[in-house]
Length: 449
Ligand SMILES: Cc1cc2nc3c(=O)[nH]c(=O)nc-3n(C[C@H](O)[C@H](O)[C@H](O)COP(=O)(O)OP(=O)(O)OC[C@H]3O[C@@H](n4cnc5c(N)ncnc54)[C@H](O)[C@@H]3O)c2cc1C
Image (cartoon, protein in one colour):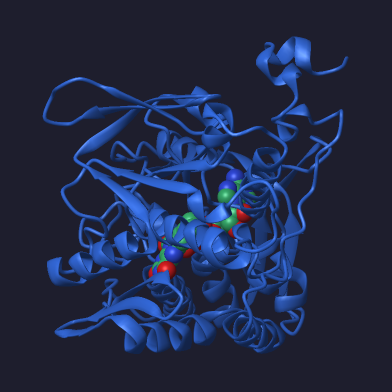
């Protein structure tokens, strides 16, 4: 191998980054580095099943080092990209101990994805976690199951009721999935395990600003989803914005005007919006690229940044109106960038990126899901079967697929959820111990040292 190999640096080992790296694997004229802040590939579409105790973190994630070990020309590094120097063609990254290192590139692929957005009200995050990472899923699992435990120790009354009330902000796929799953946990998994409380009395409130849930689906499918949720016992509140989140609950304001309403809910979950990760905003700034309000970066037809044919943007971060924030777009984008790199090396012209819409699916509850592929629309049990096949086909790693199917079958047969274990945090991470009174104090007082 010569030193003239093209150095491709991929920021992010999600769907876009992983598919790009795999497609460039085993080429002896390319040297690929995948830099990821979590060192793992996370299957975000099943995060809610991890959060609600059906699947473990091992089912929905895979070490990138293991996943890419078979490609001699691909290395993986753990680190968070923090700085881009487009003149020197280097990216600086932080190790977990906050020391830094620098990687150089000939081609840069920014596939770092989005994070939860609180629309400028970052203080909501303390009481209303989002769902984008494994930490989020485990944090939600802790809040969900400890809420029932706390309620069990309280006498009947408003305080106990507030622990048995769960508010979900955002009626997109993630909000719908979470709301449905919490009711299933209450009515099936926990139904006969408590002595003092009746988990089936748990209220699940789903808030959304639109006039229907699952707006990206056809109206008849979204109507089906709403009816299924209501049958499950989810209370739908449409046309409202969650305008305040605090320790004891939420304030909700009608979009059309009118008085705000307060709900006591000790568990609040936030799925209402996304924004680009900080590194992507930095990339747009140093490259002089325009970005939309959420931080998605404008691209040329081949997915490069204008004036920088060596910098590609992939997946959720791409700021082009016709591209949805779904896994399929990230995977196709990753493959497209790999094809561009290969064409450059072969002296051929790059092609424009064309996204092929292969449809979308959303889970509502056991035996109920939606599938929309062009004119084909499935709901109910058929939709659920199709949903299951699609997710298993895309899940990374054969072992993960086999064990996920086995776990699903066990969960269908019995009411149990096998992955309910949660962590309590420690004195050094008081934010995890949200029931501690220290959390009411300012962070500087709450943290030792
Ligand atoms: C809860 C949930 C459910 C979803 N359900 C579906 C679904 O059912 N169907 C569907 O098609 N899509 C679904 N999506 C969307 C889908 O997961 C995304 O569209 C897809 O993951 C985008 O891929 P990506 O490669 O752009 O980014 P990601 O998959 O988000 O990967 C980004 C990677 O970059 C890393 N990273 C971030 N910042 C840095 C940094 N500074 N330095 C180094 N590494 C960094 C992260 O660790 C991560 O591994 C869902 C998303 C969520 C959150």
